[in-house]
Image (cartoon, rainbow, N blue to C red; front, side, top):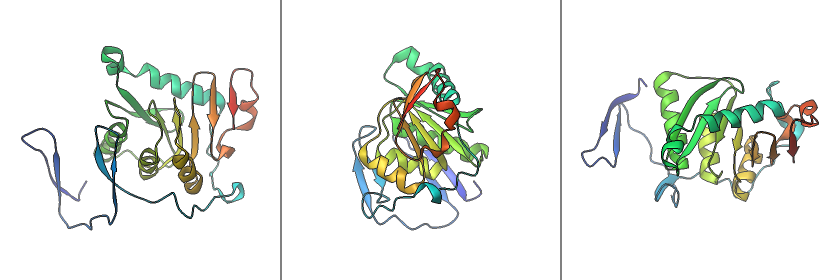
Length: 208
C-alpha cells in the first residue's frame, strides 16, 4: 500500500484510477475476455509448453485438507451468500486457511469477486502462507491466473473448470477441485493435498 499515491472513482462511476508513486511497465500481451460483461486481462500464457509438475516435485509443506474440511468450506461459502439470497445471479468467493475464512466477496461477475478479495487482502494486510480459495464461479484460465496471483494453493469451485485452467493448475502446482458439494467433490490436479484417510470416509466421496 505504500506504493499507492491516490485512488479515485471516476465521475461516471465506471472506472477506478489508481496512481502510484512510481512508473510501471505495461504488460506486453492482453486478452479480451467475455467474463463480467467484457474486459481486458493481462495474459500469462499457460497453454503452451506446459511443464507438468510431478507429484514428487510438489512441495506441499505439510498443508492439506480432509474431505470433511472441503465440505465445510463449500457449505460456509453457500451460507455467506447474502446478496445471492436477496437477488440471485450473484457470485461469491472466499479466502481461507482451510479452517478460518478471512475474506468473503460477492459480485455479479465471478472474476470481480477475486479482484475484490485481492483488494481486501492488500488494504487489510492479510497474509497467509497457504491459501484456499472457494468460489461459486466456473474456473476459467483467467480465474486460475488470479488465484495464482493471490497465492492460492487449493482452488475449490461448486462448478466446472475449463481444460486450460486444469493445464495451468497442473503446471503451477495448484490443487484444483470442481463440482464441490457438502458430501462430494472432484479433484482435477495435485490430489496430494487431499488427506487420504478422509477420502475413504463414508461421509464424503472424492473423485480424481
